Length: 194
Image (cartoon, rainbow, N blue to C red; front, side, top):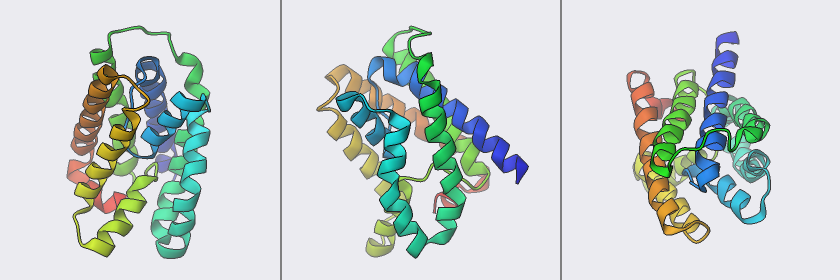
């Protein structure tokens, strides 16, 4: 239990640094509920972590009634990562590098944070739960559904960010996916997301 808590905190710090130091300064997006939180932040200048928690409430209510293991395994990941995202917001602007390097480094840090948590059977929750329910109803592969949802979120975000940031955001999503897959490959990450 202590190991899981420690990994959740460390993973959340990686996630928060990736988002605040490398993604937000260039108005880059990630997929999932984090991406939606960033879109809301860019439009209304609301704290991204708080937005992520608020947007996740309906999903967690659904999880409570229909899939309790997901609720228990991801609630603390959601809370810690959202808290860290807002706590580390003061780091924005401390490192200034070009957008392509930011998208790669930021994506790697976010992917590392998510991957670490998934290896310990926790996650940041969010749209993974929604993807799981859609997969159950449609018999589609949950990985394809997550990819489609991330693509939709980035596409919606393209109306908020410029076309260059949109292209770099696609790099972010790709790097996050690759790093997460590498870190969870031996543990079978789909077992934990689902």
